Length: 172
Image (cartoon, rainbow, N blue to C red; front, side, top):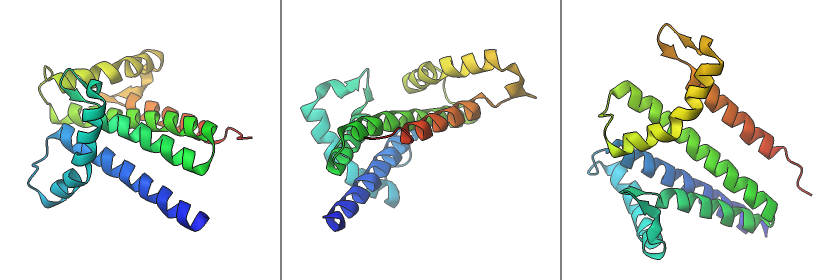
C-alpha cells in the first residue's frame, strides 16, 4: 500500500507548492500571459473556482482566501491518508505557519519595491505582519542596523523553530 500512498502524498505536496506559487504570483500581479504563469493558473483556477462556489465566504473584502483554505484542506487530507488525526492537526498548524512565513517574505519584498501603501492588499499584509515585527523591534532594538531591519529574519527563524518543535512532538 505504501507504493501507492507515497506518490499520492508527494503529488499533494507538489500541488500545495503550486498553490503557494500561484498565490504569490497573483499578489505580485505578474503578467498572466507568460507561459509559466499561464500553466500555474490552469492548474489552480478550476480548484479555486470550486472552492469559491462551495465556500463563498472565502472572498473577504476583495481578498481571495481560497488558496489558504485549499492548502489547509490538502494538508489535512494528506495527513488523514497517513492515518493520524493528530498528525493532521500538526500539519494544518505547520501549513498556517508556512503561509505566514510566505506573507512575511511578501512584506519584505513589498518594502523594497515601494508599492502604494494605500493598496488594500498592502494594507492587509502590513496589518498581519507588522505587530509581531514591531514587538521584536521593541524587545530587540539592536536588530535595526544602519537602517536595515533584521526583525523579519528573526521572526522567520522563530517560526521555523516552532515548526521544528511541532515536528518533534511524539505521536503515540
